[in-house]
Length: 344
Ligand SMILES: *[C@@H]1O[C@H](CO)[C@@H](O)[C@H](O)[C@H]1NC(C)=O
Ligand SMILES: *[C@@H]1O[C@H](CO)[C@@H](O)[C@H](O)[C@H]1NC(C)=O
Image (cartoon, rainbow, N blue to C red; front, top):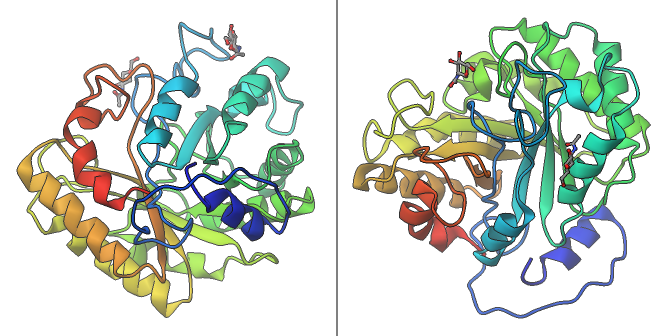
């Protein structure tokens, strides 16, 4: 973190944290969540390459073979570029082996905590699970209560309660809409019951939590309640034809602003805050224009949009089309300059 945001975060968390303040000359961010910065970060690790949730066919699996933790030195490089939020994914079955409500694997927890303890960043703790569909809201509540009872830094932590099912990703899809609502509410209840009152809680909806389908699919999510009033609706948006983020080709140069516009209206109409938890486009002129148009549209609606997180970085991305991993990643080399105006 480069400037006043730690103070701001501490204030947001309602705690007094003495923090070194460094000056920097960049202009204020167009977004408000953390002053001065759009929140572009390491997203999790969503396909089959790397990350603490990877190797989904091998549980618990072997560190360094089946899965890997993000590299704190490359995270630091991205922080130095102005990023300040990192969506850290982990596998539920590795943290709580055997049972969702069981005790945690101390080694996995220690490695996870090491990333969350990095200074000056927000970390979004994001679970994925590849077991059967979770239908027990009470077990899901207990899992999140156990997570939130850990002594993680509270001033820079958001908790995301994705319960991905049957997939390597972290997004709900094809599930009963009321169950999605109830699982989200159970997680909120568990986190608050643990005494974690300062954290933001990021919630995700059905249909891969897509922004473009949010209003038609996830309207019921407006019923979620939080005694701390710190719910953030996390949506994802890719700009290829089917919105899956599997092609480097964007539909048009205006597709970004088009795909978030109904979600923007929904957030505003319902008095909610949103964040784009995943977005990406290929390294080409059309996508660069589309990404810029989307971020500008969100920045113009910074009363409801708190920021955005690029998908994705991580040590094992190799030549992946969207890799933001310093320094060889395709997007790190070809897209970072496009994002730069939005960074702190
Ligand atoms: C992930 O890897 C498995 C094999 O390990 C393969 O069957 C699957 O298609 C891959 N999924 C993606 C999204 O790459
Ligand atoms: C934790 O990280 C260390 C390397 O720093 C590794 O040796 C160990 O296997 C990891 N354990 C887990 C459970 O991730």
